[in-house]
Length: 370
Image 1: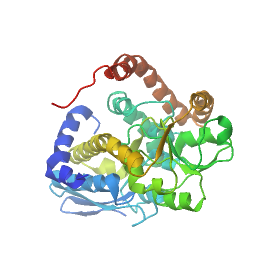
Image 2: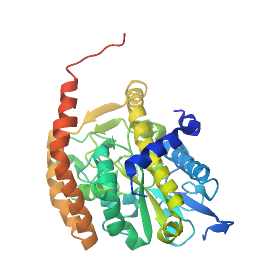
Image 3: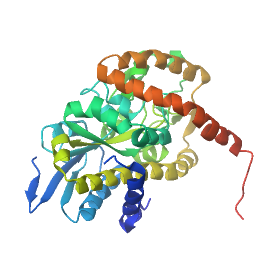
Protein backbone atom coordinates (compact mmCIF):
# COMPACT_ATOMS: atom_id res chain seq x y z
CA UNK A 1 0.00 0.00 0.00
CA UNK A 2 3.08 2.22 0.02
CA UNK A 3 2.11 3.64 3.42
CA UNK A 4 5.67 4.39 4.39
CA UNK A 5 6.40 6.27 1.17
CA UNK A 6 3.18 8.21 1.58
CA UNK A 7 4.11 9.41 5.03
CA UNK A 8 7.88 9.72 4.98
CA UNK A 9 7.84 11.92 1.89
CA UNK A 10 6.22 14.63 3.92
CA UNK A 11 2.56 13.81 3.56
CA UNK A 12 1.96 13.54 7.29
CA UNK A 13 3.54 16.94 7.73
CA UNK A 14 1.39 18.38 4.95
CA UNK A 15 -1.70 16.79 6.42
CA UNK A 16 -0.78 18.13 9.85
CA UNK A 17 -0.45 21.63 8.48
CA UNK A 18 -3.84 21.34 6.85
CA UNK A 19 -5.30 19.83 9.99
CA UNK A 20 -3.99 22.74 12.06
CA UNK A 21 -6.21 25.07 10.09
CA UNK A 22 -9.15 22.69 10.30
CA UNK A 23 -8.82 21.85 13.96
CA UNK A 24 -8.36 25.40 15.17
CA UNK A 25 -8.24 25.65 18.95
CA UNK A 26 -8.26 21.91 19.66
CA UNK A 27 -4.99 21.69 20.61
CA UNK A 28 6.77 5.46 33.29
CA UNK A 29 7.62 8.90 34.25
CA UNK A 30 9.02 10.39 31.07
CA UNK A 31 12.69 11.25 31.00
CA UNK A 32 13.31 15.00 30.95
CA UNK A 33 16.76 16.31 30.03
CA UNK A 34 17.63 19.78 28.80
CA UNK A 35 13.94 20.51 28.34
CA UNK A 36 13.33 17.32 26.36
CA UNK A 37 10.66 14.73 27.08
CA UNK A 38 10.60 11.05 26.16
CA UNK A 39 7.26 9.34 26.12
CA UNK A 40 6.24 5.72 25.89
CA UNK A 41 3.15 4.98 23.81
CA UNK A 42 1.29 1.67 23.80
CA UNK A 43 -1.09 0.50 21.12
CA UNK A 44 -3.98 -1.94 21.12
CA UNK A 45 -3.18 -2.76 17.49
CA UNK A 46 -0.44 -4.88 15.95
CA UNK A 47 2.64 -3.52 14.21
CA UNK A 48 1.69 -4.85 10.78
CA UNK A 49 -0.93 -3.10 8.73
CA UNK A 50 -2.12 0.43 8.35
CA UNK A 51 -2.84 1.25 11.98
CA UNK A 52 0.52 0.08 13.31
CA UNK A 53 2.53 1.85 10.63
CA UNK A 54 0.48 5.04 10.83
CA UNK A 55 1.03 5.28 14.60
CA UNK A 56 4.77 4.89 14.06
CA UNK A 57 4.69 7.77 11.59
CA UNK A 58 2.77 9.91 14.07
CA UNK A 59 5.61 9.44 16.55
CA UNK A 60 8.16 10.36 13.88
CA UNK A 61 6.22 13.50 13.03
CA UNK A 62 6.10 14.65 16.66
CA UNK A 63 9.85 14.13 17.07
CA UNK A 64 10.65 15.96 13.84
CA UNK A 65 8.23 18.84 14.28
CA UNK A 66 9.36 19.40 17.88
CA UNK A 67 13.04 19.16 16.87
CA UNK A 68 13.49 16.40 19.42
CA UNK A 69 11.89 18.20 22.35
CA UNK A 70 9.31 15.41 22.52
CA UNK A 71 10.08 11.87 21.34
CA UNK A 72 7.68 8.95 21.51
CA UNK A 73 8.69 5.30 21.66
CA UNK A 74 5.85 3.18 20.27
CA UNK A 75 5.11 -0.31 21.59
CA UNK A 76 2.55 -2.24 19.58
CA UNK A 77 0.04 -4.74 20.94
CA UNK A 78 1.78 -7.42 23.00
CA UNK A 79 5.22 -5.79 22.91
CA UNK A 80 4.93 -4.13 26.31
CA UNK A 81 1.38 -4.83 27.44
CA UNK A 82 -1.56 -6.82 26.12
CA UNK A 83 -3.88 -4.98 23.69
CA UNK A 84 -6.70 -4.32 26.16
CA UNK A 85 -4.22 -3.26 28.87
CA UNK A 86 -3.06 -0.17 26.99
CA UNK A 87 -5.32 2.12 28.98
CA UNK A 88 -4.09 0.65 32.27
CA UNK A 89 -0.51 1.31 31.21
CA UNK A 90 -1.27 5.00 30.70
CA UNK A 91 -3.28 5.32 33.89
CA UNK A 92 -0.53 3.74 35.99
CA UNK A 93 2.30 5.75 34.43
CA UNK A 94 3.93 2.88 32.55
CA UNK A 95 3.19 4.83 29.38
CA UNK A 96 2.24 8.41 28.67
CA UNK A 97 0.07 7.76 25.61
CA UNK A 98 -2.13 5.00 24.23
CA UNK A 99 -3.81 4.22 20.92
CA UNK A 100 -6.89 2.07 20.48
CA UNK A 101 -10.66 2.16 20.03
CA UNK A 102 -12.78 3.78 22.76
CA UNK A 103 -15.12 0.80 23.15
CA UNK A 104 -12.14 -1.34 24.19
CA UNK A 105 -12.24 0.58 27.46
CA UNK A 106 -15.95 0.08 28.17
CA UNK A 107 -15.12 -1.51 31.51
CA UNK A 108 -13.66 1.80 32.63
CA UNK A 109 -16.51 4.10 31.66
CA UNK A 110 -20.21 3.92 30.86
CA UNK A 111 -19.78 6.80 28.42
CA UNK A 112 -16.66 5.96 26.48
CA UNK A 113 -18.15 3.53 23.93
CA UNK A 114 -20.31 6.35 22.59
CA UNK A 115 -17.13 8.16 21.51
CA UNK A 116 -16.19 5.31 19.16
CA UNK A 117 -19.44 4.76 17.32
CA UNK A 118 -23.17 4.57 17.79
CA UNK A 119 -25.21 2.11 15.72
CA UNK A 120 -27.28 3.94 13.12
CA UNK A 121 -25.34 7.04 14.16
CA UNK A 122 -22.85 9.37 12.47
CA UNK A 123 -20.81 8.84 9.32
CA UNK A 124 -17.06 9.50 9.39
CA UNK A 125 -17.48 12.95 7.87
CA UNK A 126 -20.15 13.74 10.43
CA UNK A 127 -17.98 12.40 13.26
CA UNK A 128 -15.14 14.69 12.24
CA UNK A 129 -17.54 17.62 12.10
CA UNK A 130 -18.76 16.67 15.58
CA UNK A 131 -15.23 16.34 16.97
CA UNK A 132 -13.67 19.50 15.55
CA UNK A 133 -16.59 21.90 15.18
CA UNK A 134 -19.43 20.41 17.19
CA UNK A 135 -17.76 20.29 20.61
CA UNK A 136 -17.19 16.54 20.42
CA UNK A 137 -13.63 16.53 21.73
CA UNK A 138 -14.59 18.72 24.66
CA UNK A 139 -17.63 16.68 25.68
CA UNK A 140 -15.71 13.40 25.25
CA UNK A 141 -12.98 14.76 27.51
CA UNK A 142 -15.50 15.94 30.09
CA UNK A 143 -17.64 12.80 30.23
CA UNK A 144 -15.28 9.92 29.40
CA UNK A 145 -11.58 10.74 29.49
CA UNK A 146 -10.96 13.37 32.18
CA UNK A 147 -12.67 11.21 34.85
CA UNK A 148 -10.06 8.55 33.98
CA UNK A 149 -7.18 11.01 34.23
CA UNK A 150 -6.78 11.12 30.45
CA UNK A 151 -6.83 13.56 27.54
CA UNK A 152 -8.60 12.48 24.32
CA UNK A 153 -7.55 13.16 20.73
CA UNK A 154 -9.12 11.52 17.65
CA UNK A 155 -6.35 9.49 16.00
CA UNK A 156 -8.03 7.76 13.10
CA UNK A 157 -11.35 6.63 11.69
CA UNK A 158 -12.19 3.38 9.93
CA UNK A 159 -15.07 4.88 7.98
CA UNK A 160 -18.17 2.74 7.45
CA UNK A 161 -17.39 -0.82 8.46
CA UNK A 162 -18.69 -4.06 7.01
CA UNK A 163 -21.37 -6.01 8.84
CA UNK A 164 -19.20 -9.03 9.48
CA UNK A 165 -18.25 -12.61 8.60
CA UNK A 166 -20.58 -15.51 9.31
CA UNK A 167 -20.08 -19.26 9.04
CA UNK A 168 -23.74 -19.61 8.04
CA UNK A 169 -26.25 -17.32 6.41
CA UNK A 170 -28.27 -15.01 8.66
CA UNK A 171 -31.53 -13.88 7.14
CA UNK A 172 -33.99 -13.65 10.01
CA UNK A 173 -34.02 -12.68 13.66
CA UNK A 174 -34.30 -16.38 14.51
CA UNK A 175 -30.93 -16.98 12.83
CA UNK A 176 -29.22 -14.83 15.45
CA UNK A 177 -30.26 -16.95 18.42
CA UNK A 178 -27.29 -18.77 19.95
CA UNK A 179 -24.64 -17.35 17.63
CA UNK A 180 -21.18 -16.84 19.13
CA UNK A 181 -20.13 -13.55 17.56
CA UNK A 182 -17.25 -11.15 18.12
CA UNK A 183 -18.53 -7.57 18.21
CA UNK A 184 -17.31 -4.92 20.67
CA UNK A 185 -19.09 -1.74 21.58
CA UNK A 186 -22.73 -0.78 21.62
CA UNK A 187 -23.52 -3.00 18.64
CA UNK A 188 -22.62 -6.02 20.69
CA UNK A 189 -24.97 -4.91 23.46
CA UNK A 190 -27.82 -4.80 20.94
CA UNK A 191 -27.03 -8.26 19.58
CA UNK A 192 -27.13 -9.70 23.09
CA UNK A 193 -30.83 -8.90 23.26
CA UNK A 194 -31.41 -11.23 20.29
CA UNK A 195 -29.77 -14.15 22.08
CA UNK A 196 -26.31 -13.72 20.54
CA UNK A 197 -23.37 -14.79 22.70
CA UNK A 198 -21.21 -11.72 22.17
CA UNK A 199 -17.46 -12.18 22.59
CA UNK A 200 -14.85 -9.44 22.94
CA UNK A 201 -11.46 -10.36 21.48
CA UNK A 202 -8.39 -8.33 20.49
CA UNK A 203 -7.42 -8.43 16.84
CA UNK A 204 -4.70 -11.04 17.16
CA UNK A 205 -7.13 -13.56 18.64
CA UNK A 206 -9.94 -13.19 16.11
CA UNK A 207 -8.71 -15.54 13.37
CA UNK A 208 -7.65 -18.34 15.76
CA UNK A 209 -11.04 -18.17 17.49
CA UNK A 210 -12.84 -18.30 14.16
CA UNK A 211 -10.68 -21.20 12.99
CA UNK A 212 -11.23 -23.26 16.12
CA UNK A 213 -14.98 -22.68 16.13
CA UNK A 214 -14.84 -20.76 19.40
CA UNK A 215 -16.85 -18.12 17.56
CA UNK A 216 -19.31 -18.50 14.66
CA UNK A 217 -18.53 -15.13 13.17
CA UNK A 218 -16.91 -11.78 13.65
CA UNK A 219 -16.88 -8.21 12.52
CA UNK A 220 -13.51 -6.57 12.11
CA UNK A 221 -13.19 -3.38 10.10
CA UNK A 222 -13.61 -3.41 6.33
CA UNK A 223 -12.31 -5.16 3.20
CA UNK A 224 -8.68 -4.02 3.33
CA UNK A 225 -8.18 -4.84 7.01
CA UNK A 226 -10.27 -8.01 6.78
CA UNK A 227 -8.29 -9.24 3.77
CA UNK A 228 -5.04 -8.70 5.63
CA UNK A 229 -6.31 -10.62 8.62
CA UNK A 230 -7.21 -13.59 6.44
CA UNK A 231 -10.77 -14.05 7.67
CA UNK A 232 -11.80 -15.36 4.24
CA UNK A 233 -9.72 -18.49 4.90
CA UNK A 234 -12.30 -19.69 7.42
CA UNK A 235 -15.71 -18.25 6.49
CA UNK A 236 -17.13 -17.03 3.19
CA UNK A 237 -20.32 -15.12 4.04
CA UNK A 238 -19.49 -11.40 4.18
CA UNK A 239 -22.35 -9.13 5.20
CA UNK A 240 -23.05 -5.43 4.75
CA UNK A 241 -23.77 -2.70 5.77
CA UNK A 242 -22.01 -2.12 9.07
CA UNK A 243 -25.10 -0.92 10.93
CA UNK A 244 -23.17 -1.24 14.20
CA UNK A 245 -20.35 1.11 13.18
CA UNK A 246 -21.27 3.58 10.42
CA UNK A 247 -17.86 5.01 11.25
CA UNK A 248 -15.48 4.43 14.14
CA UNK A 249 -13.24 6.93 15.89
CA UNK A 250 -9.89 5.56 17.06
CA UNK A 251 -8.61 7.25 20.18
CA UNK A 252 -5.32 8.66 21.25
CA UNK A 253 -5.42 8.97 25.04
CA UNK A 254 -2.75 10.78 26.99
CA UNK A 255 -1.92 10.98 30.66
CA UNK A 256 -3.74 14.18 31.58
CA UNK A 257 -0.96 15.49 33.83
CA UNK A 258 1.61 14.87 31.11
CA UNK A 259 -0.59 16.62 28.57
CA UNK A 260 -1.01 19.61 30.86
CA UNK A 261 2.74 19.75 31.45
CA UNK A 262 3.42 20.37 27.76
CA UNK A 263 3.97 23.94 26.62
CA UNK A 264 1.63 25.38 24.01
CA UNK A 265 3.92 24.59 21.09
CA UNK A 266 4.22 20.91 22.01
CA UNK A 267 0.48 20.67 22.57
CA UNK A 268 -0.03 22.11 19.10
CA UNK A 269 2.40 19.63 17.55
CA UNK A 270 0.76 16.62 19.21
CA UNK A 271 -2.66 17.93 18.21
CA UNK A 272 -1.53 18.48 14.62
CA UNK A 273 -0.02 15.02 14.44
CA UNK A 274 -3.17 13.41 15.84
CA UNK A 275 -5.39 15.29 13.38
CA UNK A 276 -3.12 14.25 10.52
CA UNK A 277 -3.23 10.64 11.71
CA UNK A 278 -7.02 10.86 11.82
CA UNK A 279 -7.14 12.24 8.28
CA UNK A 280 -4.63 9.73 6.90
CA UNK A 281 -6.18 6.57 8.35
CA UNK A 282 -9.66 7.43 7.10
CA UNK A 283 -8.41 8.47 3.65
CA UNK A 284 -6.28 5.36 3.25
CA UNK A 285 -9.09 2.99 4.18
CA UNK A 286 -11.37 4.78 1.74
CA UNK A 287 -8.76 4.49 -1.02
CA UNK A 288 -8.01 0.78 -0.68
CA UNK A 289 -11.24 -0.85 0.47
CA UNK A 290 -12.83 -1.40 -2.93
CA UNK A 291 -9.76 -3.06 -4.45
CA UNK A 292 -9.62 -5.35 -1.42
CA UNK A 293 -13.32 -6.12 -1.73
CA UNK A 294 -12.92 -7.10 -5.39
CA UNK A 295 -10.01 -9.35 -4.48
CA UNK A 296 -12.02 -11.03 -1.73
CA UNK A 297 -14.85 -11.79 -4.14
CA UNK A 298 -12.92 -12.65 -7.31
CA UNK A 299 -9.81 -14.39 -5.97
CA UNK A 300 -11.02 -15.81 -2.69
CA UNK A 301 -14.63 -16.51 -3.74
CA UNK A 302 -16.15 -14.67 -0.79
CA UNK A 303 -19.94 -14.28 -1.02
CA UNK A 304 -21.03 -10.70 -0.45
CA UNK A 305 -24.47 -10.61 1.18
CA UNK A 306 -26.70 -7.70 2.23
CA UNK A 307 -28.44 -7.92 5.56
CA UNK A 308 -32.12 -8.55 4.96
CA UNK A 309 -34.61 -5.72 5.39
CA UNK A 310 -36.15 -7.76 8.18
CA UNK A 311 -32.90 -7.84 10.15
CA UNK A 312 -31.98 -4.20 9.59
CA UNK A 313 -35.45 -3.07 10.63
CA UNK A 314 -35.53 -5.30 13.71
CA UNK A 315 -32.03 -4.30 14.81
CA UNK A 316 -32.74 -0.62 14.18
CA UNK A 317 -35.90 -0.72 16.26
CA UNK A 318 -34.09 -2.57 19.03
CA UNK A 319 -31.28 0.00 18.91
CA UNK A 320 -33.73 2.77 19.80
CA UNK A 321 -34.66 0.80 22.91
CA UNK A 322 -31.24 -0.46 24.02
CA UNK A 323 -29.03 2.58 23.41
CA UNK A 324 -31.00 5.05 25.55
CA UNK A 325 -30.99 2.45 28.34
CA UNK A 326 -27.20 2.24 28.12
CA UNK A 327 -27.04 6.03 28.17
CA UNK A 328 -28.91 6.12 31.47
CA UNK A 329 -26.22 4.15 33.28
CA UNK A 330 -24.48 7.33 34.43
CA UNK A 331 -24.88 11.12 34.15
CA UNK A 332 -21.74 11.19 31.98
CA UNK A 333 -23.11 8.64 29.53
CA UNK A 334 -26.41 10.52 29.38
CA UNK A 335 -24.67 13.81 28.62
CA UNK A 336 -22.50 12.32 25.89
CA UNK A 337 -25.38 10.39 24.31
CA UNK A 338 -27.62 13.46 24.24
CA UNK A 339 -24.83 15.52 22.70
CA UNK A 340 -24.31 13.00 19.89
CA UNK A 341 -28.03 12.52 19.25
CA UNK A 342 -28.53 16.27 19.09
CA UNK A 343 -25.72 16.64 16.57
CA UNK A 344 -27.04 13.66 14.58
CA UNK A 345 -30.37 15.44 14.29
CA UNK A 346 -28.70 18.47 12.72
CA UNK A 347 -26.88 16.20 10.26
CA UNK A 348 -29.93 14.26 9.09
CA UNK A 349 -31.34 17.01 6.89
CA UNK A 350 -28.10 18.25 5.36
CA UNK A 351 -26.61 14.81 4.75
CA UNK A 352 -29.90 13.77 3.19
CA UNK A 353 -29.94 16.71 0.80
CA UNK A 354 -26.23 16.39 0.01
CA UNK A 355 -24.51 13.03 0.43
CA UNK A 356 -27.45 10.62 0.25
CA UNK A 357 -29.23 12.44 -2.58
CA UNK A 358 -26.03 12.73 -4.59
CA UNK A 359 -25.12 9.05 -4.17
CA UNK A 360 -28.58 8.08 -5.38
CA UNK A 361 -28.19 10.37 -8.40
CA UNK A 362 -24.60 9.50 -9.28
CA UNK A 363 -25.54 6.33 -11.10
CA UNK A 364 -27.15 8.40 -13.83
CA UNK A 365 -23.69 9.32 -15.18
CA UNK A 366 -21.63 6.31 -16.33
CA UNK A 367 -18.23 7.81 -17.14
CA UNK A 368 -15.55 5.94 -19.09
CA UNK A 369 -11.82 6.60 -19.26
CA UNK A 370 -10.70 8.48 -22.39
